[in-house]
Amino acid sequence: MGIFRFIQLSVAVVLAGFTVFHSMKFVDAWFYTWLTGAASVLLLLNKPQCPYWRLSTALVIVLGALETVFLAWSLHTVESGPLLSHSHSLPEGRNILLTALATTVTISSRLHGDRHNGMISYMRTFILFVSLIALIPIFGYSACFYSSTLPFCHHFHKFVF
Image (cartoon, rainbow, N blue to C red; front, side, top):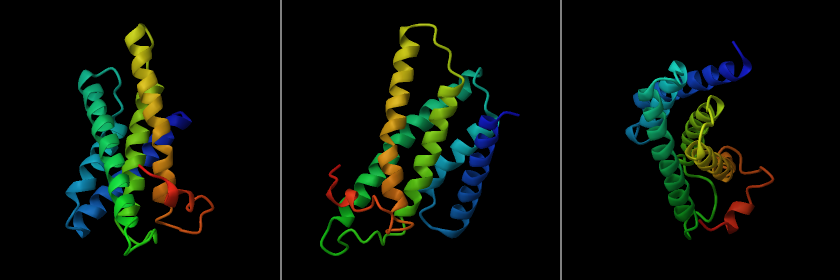
């Protein structure tokens, strides 16, 4: 087993644990757990030659990226209000990190086993790479909900989505 597969399995176990824990403890589990559960199952299976696996990863990537961007935008907008003033006190902000992780690892598993045999595959790889890079600021924003003393947290106060 290679190092990449070991990382995939480790992240899959973390996402599966979050899915089970969050489903049992919180009322709003449906909002996060569909993505983390689907990503953990896809990472555990990891069958790039199967068309259903490829379709499922495409759905997780597209819908997961949209959900992650929407969550980051909505929480940033709520925090920009006069009552919270960027205090990073909303507990929902911590869940953005796991949705971004689920989307990122699913993207990286698609990029890892990709074969380039035409112009469309190069365009697909470019789109996946751009979306992977676009999730980096969301990782940073969500990390501020765990510790607001990080040196880059003050940059997100001026950042406009």
